[in-house]
Length: 313
Image (cartoon, rainbow, N blue to C red; front, top):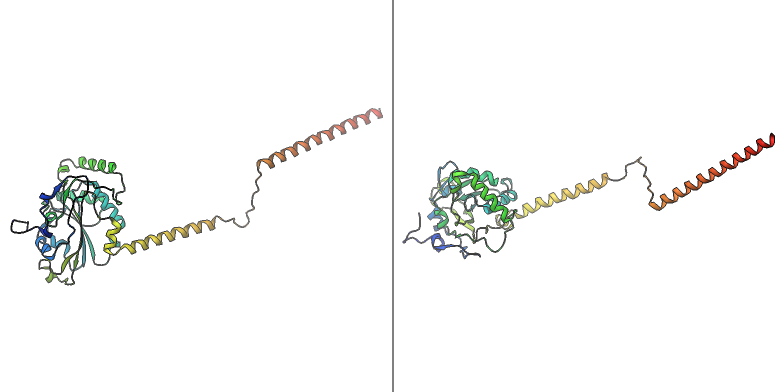
């Protein structure tokens, strides 16, 4: 249920509307983890799928098939920074690389009819939901700001100018949907929800039973998503990804070695000798000298033969 005068917002934070800031640096945001009571407060808040069908928030992360769920709260659906983040994340963490019994869910605050466009633009294989009311963001203590922050994050593969331009183009191409992407001020974050061990369907009927927040990061500016290597480490997949990279590097090195072997001189092929410029000049000089000598010998023979004929006559 939403925060009221008699019900303080989750994590003891002021409502997001009171913390709206437009500044040049990071804003101060509490990184305190939501309690189980906080999760109970938001468990029945609705999120929408791409067809506009409503689901309770708890149904998104509570499942007998998973022990841990990474929930990514992104900005508006036209945010180029968040799109870059999802592209980088899904390249480093495809579904096949997820640890056992782990799931990833994306939540934005635009309209649900843009979810399909967002999934195609980011090449995101994970389920995406929409919270147009932003009640989840407010209850979980997500901030509001337009600040870019002091530094460019590592996950951004494009220049800032390129990201802004592509975001504008995508916005224009959506026509009337251009104003349905969400609130530009609202930023998100990442949180990991974990099961305490009770995973039966009967347990899941109760609010928050068996689940707690094991880790959370709330964005302090519009680009402040957790860096992908840090997020992989929290999920426990850093070593696995590095291991895959090492194997790839070993394969590349072996290919180079095999290539060098094939470049060796093959049997039966004679080596061709080459001459430098000095050798060439000496060779030409010798040839000219021999030619002059041959001409001299020819002339001597001709004169001798002619003298013999005169004598005989």
